Length: 429
Image (cartoon, rainbow, N blue to C red; front, side):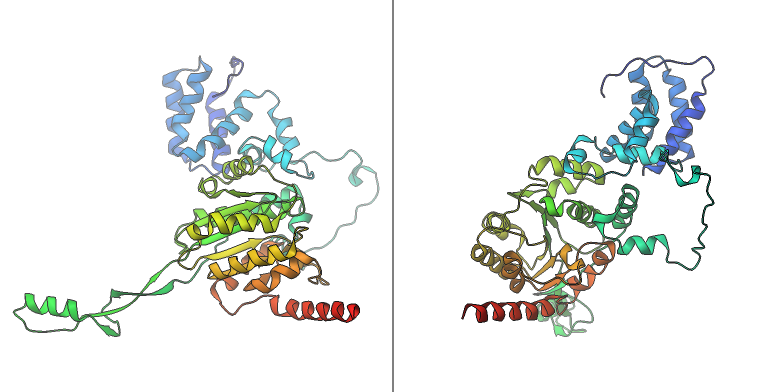
């Protein structure tokens, strides 16, 4: 725990009420705290005393924290609630809408914004001085009873156009999304009473135990297994806002049980390839993405898709793509390196994966065409080409994963690509 100035104990302080409000903030931040634990914390503070700052911190820590991933959230809320004399102004500044870059994400401590949102639950942020409500003019009231709900609007809103509050709500919605997958049948057989194939060995063993008489025929069926999910996420400057949202979604998939995935592997690439799989295993999303951002030093940098795919195919392909893995490639495809090398690496990646799905946020534009060299080189070597700029597009991703015939926009764009190539060939002749 960092060192702070000694706590000033007021003469008429209401310590019990303060601990109760502190516990409510922890509960809003996601810690499973009920009335019983609040009572235990108050009794523990009464027994340990309120004379030393370290004793008070660790007494509440022992009362409210049960898992390692809860430590960062507790620490940030404790610092803002008990230690920082200007914690309210600090939290209000965190809630202001602003253009968020990688530098701001790395400078913020893990779980700091989550703590701010928990303590400011229901509080109104700072308003501009020149607000229309203060100009003395008549305000126009709009009846929005027949309009679409806020959640429905947020589902289709572009990640890049979201404000700070909308982005926080979108991350909470992404944390509830799932990506189910169907099991893969294998050549191995497993015992099953309703199976179609007889198991003569097990039948004869059972007959020997009964004096050689066959009373029933054991049966078996093909066994199934779950595939791996491999995510390759572009974190270059043009993809930074989209990649953050997608990584929140991938974190939720990696930490949700019962979806069927055997393992979830995640890699980021910009100017180099970085494996962030172990960081996403942390259950707290803020801590996981902060660690991933510290590991990947090329956030908001350039783009070398071909070189990064070459590194993945050489170093990681045999490790993570075995046994029918599904690959999610999240990038805009804007690469200035050699297009022929990029095409070779994409072909190898496609042959190594059971299914390769490309999510491209540029598909949000109605007039999108594969004119860029990188996109034209990558498009023929994917199974499905889909948009990835909103919550709704990530929700529809489950259909592309489960349905082998779902190609998304690939067929239409391949036709457009053929027309473009014919026009280029005609112009050269």
